[in-house]
Length: 195
Image 1 (tube, one colour):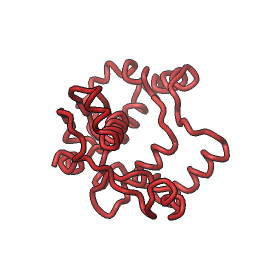
Image 2 (image 1 turned 90 degrees about the horizontal axis):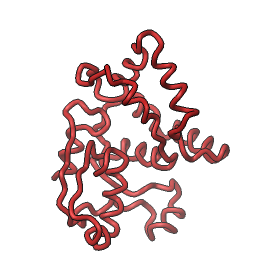
Image 3 (image 1 turned 90 degrees about the vertical axis):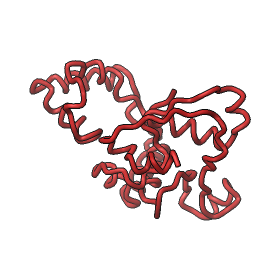
């Protein structure tokens, strides 16, 4: 079972090594699957994934050697919980509303501290850059990371542009679950994935 980034990892691996995954996994549940991101509607994500912004973020991550963004732990979760208790949690509700489904009434906010106790959960800098690339494709696509330089892509993929993952190679029964209000795993992108 995977959620969001976990589904990306599963789909990438299972498409590149289908026999290995089939020998180890009898079925998979994909929650809010993140493959194509062409239709995702989060304004902040779209802004942060613009090529110029991504170049600055990538350079900073490389220079500072900070490749795990917002890791889970007491230095991040403790202050987050304290911050979220301010103003009766309204600031965090606003952040959750803006960065997820946009309708806070679909969440049981009495359990806010439980939700937030697992956040941030971390994410790789290159994974985030990869998602940014998927946001700005010319159409729905789930392709491999673009190293930005044709020679680098040639070294990695034996072609100048990154290839698409062959999702048809996945030969494992899948349960795909998504929400109508999800801004990141947009219903149109999930429909493309299912197809």
